[in-house]
Image (cartoon, rainbow, N blue to C red):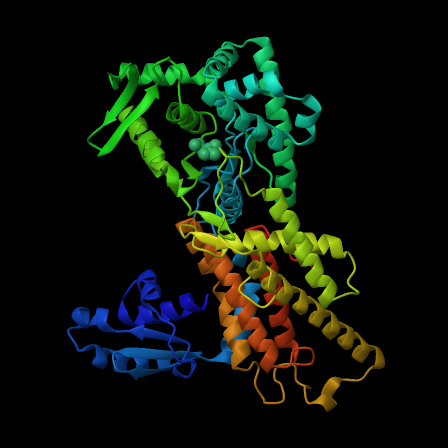
Length: 573
Ligand code: ARG
């Protein structure tokens, strides 16, 4: 809001567009220099004058406006906003419901492919990142005028299910599988690969089971459904703790009957070429390796499935835009899929976008499914909650609902620890770090929020005792609601906090445009820090109406930002 107000004044004086002015405006390195700085270099050509001269004239012009003063500093105009004019104005803006939203999406339907773990395999750390980033993007797009549609594209098809069934037939145990579906599946999978090394007939058995599955054999189908069911149940537990739901859960198997059409379409466009008995689409013009469409044995594979999936999302779900929140290691896969779609004449493939992210390690550990060595996500969640509980018990032993709050804080620490990083960065995750209440963490933001709520409670309790006893707090020197002892509406720290809150709207739009939840995580951290500086320097509880209002707005905006990222904002901690 402030940026826009300043920009409008500057554009009126210079003839530039508001947008252009906003993109040029800077925050001065020293707060004493003012609230905003405008560089005049870009105007030198337009006005055929040295930028210093332009700065002098522009500063004069701005100073004649209401609510602002300005001074030239070399080629810059430093602008200071009149606080008594802007504070009530910004506070009023902040409390409008529209402030937390935007309509830049114009109702665009965006399908978000997210989470997408593989059945009978552990929920990997990459799947966790996809889930957490995807869910944050879902909310961010939802609040910026898009219609987001989330799809969990389960990996529930492929030759490995033949192996899984073969192994289960040989060594499996139903109770065991129901009790620990993923652990038991993994054991079977590992054993299959170990024994297949000395006994190649196992591989044939696996292939045979997959063939039977593809042909709809009842026994194969029943076993496959059992694997899907028990795995989903385990994933569901995790989703619940992460507070995540999907609009659609449609696994790869859903597209089984839609694959032939893709192959036929590619064939009709004369795009298919034989290579070693398999069928591929060559992508030389795109400078990509050929994309495999049909294997030697006639079975379809991952890229073919993704083509059928994309077409379905475009045609049936009526997506205007398709996002794939999937690790960066699948970059080539998506480049190929999108390229083949374009070749096949699907012009909307321009609207398909891989939203990649970097690798995450837990305390230096990577994961390897083959060897059965994995960091179990559920154990990580449990550990985070246990540690949160220990910290809370120590900090606030009398707190009620400790368990529930420990869950909010522990899970929140993991989500925030992921989202505060630019998604493309690799993350070396440390639980200890993610859980410190003083660092750049989710718990720090949550704690700041809870502290404001309890301050506000105190302030309101005090206000009601004052009115009960009929005394006006004039004797405390706060008789006028506008000013405090120093005669100021807000001190510098309060003013900085207010300007920080004012940035919410712009940051939300930036997060949506860049598909980057870290923008909002950073915003939440900066806001919490700005509040804590304000709290350290200014009186809040009896600091007058503006400070109470400012604290209230801060708490609301922090809670909202946390919720946007997928964290709870408990009122007490
Ligand atoms: N199940 C895949 C994996 O774990 C991820 C699927 C991503 N989505 C897609 N449409 N390909 O690697």
